[in-house]
Length: 171
Image 1 (cartoon, rainbow, N blue to C red):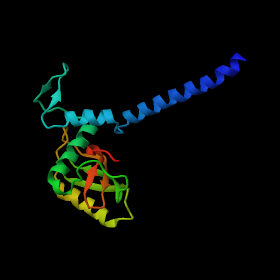
Image 2: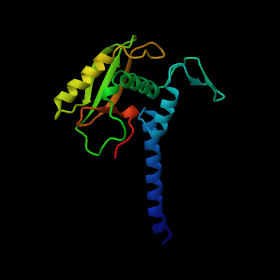
Image 3: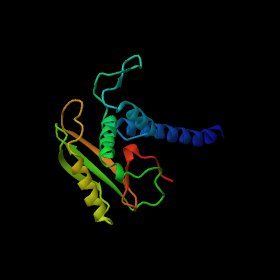
Image 4: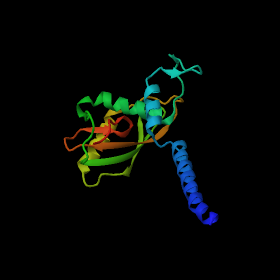
């Protein structure tokens, strides 16, 4: 009787452990969680970092891939203020595009690869590519080396966008 009662509990414990392990592996692989995004945003300002005591200093230091992605997104926003959707995105979007961006050591685009192309809206694909190319050169990576990262574009029917790295959320 006791063994039959413990069996479902053991299954639940294994499920919880698998969920925790899976979440941890995603975070280690560089997926953006809310915590890592907030941390990246707070440290992505040029010339700032936290020293071991937690105080900000003006010394430029290497940043994480998430922080670099936020810095690039801020660069795109700065150059396209009139195209950025303000506020929370509505529930239905015109398109969502996921682009892998490869930059060389000087911040110029080496390659763009669509991981999820909004094929139903080819004009959005063209505008995203045009926006990316006109924003180059991008901030140079901390190690001044070539960089590859992925950015998700949330596209509203008005022609304005938000980037997942800086999104204000969606209703």
